[in-house]
Length: 348
Length: 265
Image (cartoon, rainbow over all chains, first blue to last red):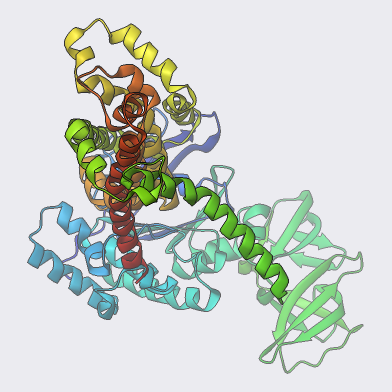
């Protein structure tokens, strides 16, 4: 199955904006290039335009005049979804209640005129690949949420699409199942080397699945980058706040040093009267010995077994959170220093 | 919850009285159609003569009503199901407006509707004299029932997303309609068909205005028999009507029930 799969398409969006009939601007003009075989995650809060972007790529919405969608360089802007050869997994799965599992999976082949015996055999292969061949003859309303999700994915893959589009495919499931299926989808997408576009509002899903993540806000791109770039070097406060817990310290840059109430730190930046230093809780090293750059007082310690979460405050009252090895014994009121890896901080 | 036996007995009594109030006239009417002489009561004996006479006098009206109901059903299916699909795909102010306009003939008195049809098309003689003239009236009157029951089911199964799913798999609009929309609209189509057939068979207001002596339907014939025949004949006519409509209702209900049971299995 995996070796005769159509290779993934390169997808390019040029100036794609979307204004709905009621005048709502869902998407500002957007340019985006997706490499063949890449898994791109569109991440953002509801109403940020991520689903609209996906639907424009799918062909379920057309961009405003001037916008263009290219598949492998060919303009498909005017092609309806049924002529684009995409696979799509919907949030509600959109499985056909009037068909059995195998009929659902074979449907794409049926409309392509593949003979019944062959299409059932091919649908059977995909079900086997998804390890749900035992469910082939079930009706859709006899399936659990996780099973439906797998059937939806199998159905989308059975037509060997050039790109698979996933619209919040795990949102309807409970947390444990979500994590399990996330790993399964990740393995599958990598094995098939298919171009995938995955829409989610869940940062953990985005970080785990994406080759690249597009963080969106108010119909525009806030940042594009690898999961590491997004996490460790967020472009702005919005991205930093949306993805993970972020510490921020207010201060100023003078002579290559970031000066704040907690102390000073060497940075590579031009002088600035107001700057914010942002970093993740787990990137800071706690040093109990005095003398290092930034000094804090311990407010609370939450022991978590392997790690401990430490809540600290600086002289001006600004608070940060960090993670420390469990061996270090700390108690409220202790004076500590922290060391920061310059490659894992962001100055905004 | 504990229920006192007294309250239960009272509830039962009220229910039985209400049921009896509704059932007794139907039974009286049926009995009247089977008695030799209604004014002497059952003592005069039971007979099927009246039923036979009704058949002899009014068989064409009965057949015509059946043909008319099936014709109305066919037209409302052909117009109503695609229309419901189109309206369900694009919900919004326009589709609500269309729905309201289509529903208007239910609110307007049948006589007014018939008058409008006669004023507009009564001049076309062949049309005016044919059963098609009544069919048009019946379609106007029953279409909203088909439309609404199909639309309700399409909204409940989220047909837009199902259709998007089918489209993403390469299905053309026609394939989507035949393979996804219609099968999933089936419960609504059945419920709508039930309404259309029963309304068409029993429709009197409109039909009375639209009919000619050669295009009498069952209810119009019934009115005619009440006006000009013995009470026993009119009652026997009612009995014939019951015999026709009840099995039909049961059959359609069973079709719907079978389907529902299969889905739940």
